[in-house]
Length: 395
Image (cartoon, rainbow, N blue to C red; front, side, top):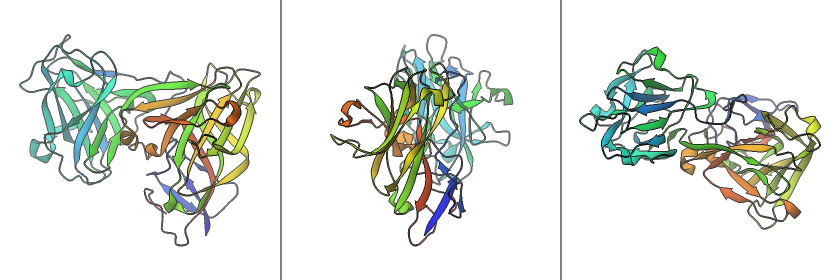
């Protein structure tokens, strides 16, 4: 039976999603947007405020909601820099959250869900990177929807951090306001306060021993400059449990626009890593038909003249190249591909690039890179029995 689904607040590039869904009768003018407003058009794609563990009272935290009962076994912090002078300077712990939205100081699992005396050499010295820390004991089973906090602070009994023996964490990103379900805090006087709460998306990671992941363990934001010899986009595999087919009508992507007298060509392919990928549909957009030029970052929406039906359980890619004018496609680098899955299934869309000259070159995949490109789906042919989709709330 054909039914159209309208999805809200979904991740760019995500095909295996966890977000609200509402069932709607089929209608030609309704669309599905795999969309996440996680970007800031007004500023460069970069990290924002850092948190320095550089004194006995310095600490930072990330607060988020449990989405599974699985016990957290590892947490990931992302450093902007570290000074490795030899010393155990930090403690990482998982705590409860009080009614004011602050870490409550009660380390989970009877005080054991922590890792004391982390040496400053655990973090990459002098450059940005993410480090995963195995807790001495897991958090114990969590209650779904409960707020919990990852706290990084000076290690009790360790080397007191100071200006020359410290770690500086990339705690938040400029790319999006944090919202209600995850936010960061920075404290310098050993007393949490409302003023410690930060406005932008925290950069962190956490995982259970299973496949439950949290956060954004991001190492870099950057962009690919598109040209006649550089085509870039995302590769994905449609979820066979959704049905038999879904109709791809267009794409959205984030980047810099082309300058006048240039064009953007957007295409969908099968056999992306084959020697000669099969082009399924394509459209070329003139620079005069876009709202922004190369100096302004924007969200582009491109509708194919010929929509195509994608077969579920099959791998495809969508990509864009330019005739000139230095337009770009923004991407985000993660520490691991598994860490990408915390972004509403973003591990299902990975970055690919190739030289499109002649149309006979295979795409090369970077499995830890998330392209800022998404799909516009206008219909799904569901299974004969309809009971909702795995990973989606509702049905």
